[in-house]
Image (cartoon, rainbow, N blue to C red; front, side, top):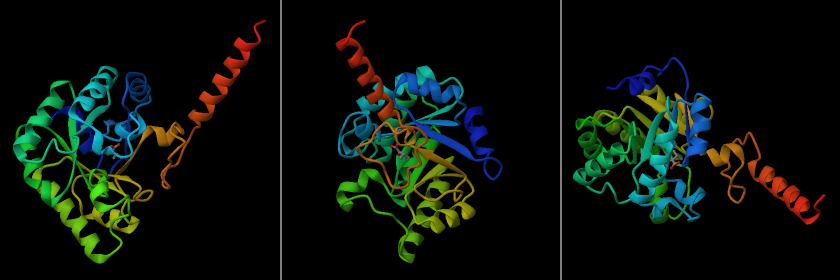
Length: 254
Ligand code: KIV
């Protein structure tokens, strides 16, 4: 295991792990300089950067283009690149995609799924590539499931998520994102899980760390804000105000 990933792994039960998304050079550089542990080039880029309704429109080309910019910016943070839908349908395809993402300088890759992706993750890990898994709500399945819906509300669903966690651990993932589950389910999984769990929409303090989409954190995508977001700035209004001030200036030159 390389030293950067080992540092994340060593934080389990010791220090919370921070992970934020970035899709471009300046944002990634600011996050890196702020000391964020991990920068995720998530396929959420399809929604917040490219204006698609969900993540299913994202291609490997998109990830390579945005991922390379983030890699150029990040000096300390672990850079995780998401694997887009239908780029890991088989273990062989998963490995080829992971290798393409690592070739531009990623530190790790992320993919969605648990029991159904155990073999895919194992194949990537056995090739020496660190994998962050992603269980609970899977945005790439949102179309087939008919929308974004909290997971783990029934005992059967909670047990299935637990089995997904066990599968990704067996496969050798170094970390697992738990998205939008009932908070008690995320807490139970974290307790039982030997690898770092990273929550999003899964309750505060329930996981070993948290991940957030940078646009949600800084208020840069005002047209859709998930209910669980905790914005710390209002970049959309700052841009609107700067543009209005500038427009007034050019309309009334001194
Ligand atoms: O694509 C993404 O940004 C993600 C996070 C929400 C975990 O997968």
